[in-house]
Structures are given as C-alpha cells and as structure tokens.
Image (cartoon, rainbow, N blue to C red; front, side, top):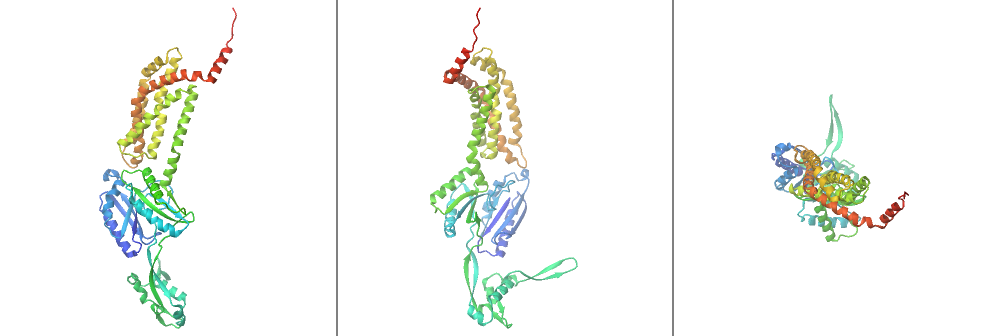
Length: 479
C-alpha cells in the first residue's frame, strides 16, 4: 500500500515528524503488515509525508488491500492534526498527477480567486456523497508566514542594506554551506545555522542581530517589525492554468461509474462560474473514455461476427439465429458477477467479449448440421431436431472444455488472482446459463427465422427479379 500524510497547513516539521511516527506505530500493529517506510517533506510541502507499506502474503493476511484500508481507517483517525490516506499500489498507473487517493477530479480556472472560493465548496459537497471515501484536496493556501517589515529610513541611518538583512536571515534559518572538511576517507560539509531549538517560534527573530558596515551589532527589531500572514504552500497548474485536484477513494462495494455520475451531478447543482472547468483525471478519465466507446466496440464486434457468418452460410437470416445465443451468455455473466459481489470492470468486460466468440459455437454446430440435412429434402423442423440430437455431445464437450479452462481463473488463489477472477467468473457464469438455455432456444429461433425467410425475404422485389431471371435462363429441349 501507499499512503499520503496530510498535516495541518501551519504544522512545523518537528510536529509533522512526531505525527508520522505515530502513524507508523499504528500501522505496524496490524497483523497483516510486514514492513513500513515513511518520510516527511521531500519534494512535497513540509506538511506532507509519504508512507509505503509492505503486506504479508495473501495466504497469511486473509483479507484484501481494500479491506485492510477499511480496517485501518478508524484507527488512523485518532491522530490529531493529520490524516493518512491509503491506496493500493497499482501495477499500471494511467495518467493523473500524484495524489492522496486513487481517483482525481480537477478544477481549473482563469481566475485564481474564484477557483479558491469554489473548490472548497465542492470539496464539502463531495464529502457528503456516501459512495466516496477519503475525499481531500491539494489546495494549500492557509500556510503561515512571518513577514519582516523593514523601516528603510532607520536601516539607512544605521548603514544596513536589505542585502545584509537577507544574508543574516539566511545564515540564521537557512542551510548555508560555509566550508568543507576534507579527511582521508571522506569529506564533510559545514552548514551554518542557529541551534534548531531557537527556530521553533517567530520569537526567534527578536534575537537576530545584523552587523553594520562599521562592525556594530544592531538587533533586527530595532529597525524592523514583524507580522504574521497566510501564504500558499503550493500552487498547482494544469494546462498553464491554476488547478485544484480533489482526490477520492471508493466506499467498500462502490463502483466508479456511480461515483463519477454523483460528482458530475454535484458540480451541476452548484452552478459554478463559466471560468471554472472540471474534469476527471487519471484512472477516472480513462474509465470515462472507455465507457463512452464501449457500446461502439461491442456493436462493431457483433457486426463483424454477423458479416463473417453471413459470408459463411450465404444467408442474411441464419447469422441472427446464431447471434441470438449471446443475450443469455451476457445475462449469465452479469448474474455470476452479482452472485460473487464483483464489479463490472474492464477485466469482466473482456470476459463478456470472449463469450461472444465462445457461446455462439453452440448455435454454429447445430445450424451448420441442420442446413446440410435440410438440403437433402427434409423440412426445417426435422432438420433442426436431428441436429439437436446428433450435435448434443459435441456441444457438451466443447462447453465443458471451455468452462474447465476458465475454472482456475475464477477460483484460483495467489498473487494477482483478484485481477483474473472477474474474467473467469464472467466466462463460467455465461457458459452455464447459455448452455442451459441455448439447447432449447436455438431450435425455436431457427424455425422462426426460417419462416421469416419464407414469408418476407422471398417476397422482396429484388428477390422476385432474381427468381424470374433464373426461370428465363432455363433451357427448353425439344423431343
């Protein structure tokens, strides 16, 4: 797991370090955790930290990552002034910036004041949505700073320049390297700063002295006064515009489709200014893109199958008979996912698309044989009845082979099994339901399609012209 620690925006580094150690202690007490690594600051602001957790093997901890996060969430909420947001480490990251949760929704605007006014309102509204958990924002505009207001006239009379003031402040509170100590096996950088215990409060400015050009030491407070103010810790941008990213995780049992619709509805209800634009990022954006093209992809697959079958049987009708087996397979896959409480994710959708190629073989085996028998002079009813009897064993054998091949995916254990399981569940459920139904429905659909061909297709104008042309081409032989 990977976690992001968010402290209060006015927290000091020392307090943030103490809160991080408390989080480490709580996480390490969980029996499913093997190792914990955390640090404060880094490339982020000093009120942020990161934590990486190595879990024990699934056979030992017996729960998933999401279940572990749900178990740790109430324990971690007892640390005052800081929050730890966990998410499972993904092998494949799809876009988006590094955030405190798995999914992101970004607001960008031309007016920074309007953006910082509306983003917190949307954040509060999203926290009331039950499908979302760990809702947080990267808006960091409430940090504290201490301003040094210089009386330039007094400083000038004392012979003190702004550059001297800047240098002495950096010598005191910065980390200026002033020398290097060279030894036989190593070298050491000498860093100048005051004792860290004198850096904890703004009162330390009262003890700073500036050396004038004449060598006299003058207190900084003699020609300057100090005032606290708020400042932005970070200002994020996206597409050259200021942006605020709201991150969120899903509630246990929730799905991303419902969450994205709830967020879009919440934004519409707020009636934000036209200068503020909202969009999903990362995995949520990829989900929306795939969802928009999903019906087109499924329709394209069905059209491709229809064209191939039409060319194979030289018929416009019987490919529909074969495709009639697909609804039962899709229904079986969805019922199996509901039974095992799994989401219709991308992996499960791949399983449903695979069923298009697997399930239609039942109808192909029967209809191919029925058409051959029908050409011998038997009626359609006799042909499909004989096909259902003779082709029963091949249908059962091929279905059993496909189902047993998907069993390890559906019920296998081990690392990565949670990714493969929806694929196997969808295939097994679709095969079971389609096998139970298509043995009875395919002959019925075949007969109805055959009657439709006789009643409708044979009476089409282009069909009558073609028959008439064939009758004219029949040669007449005299005795």
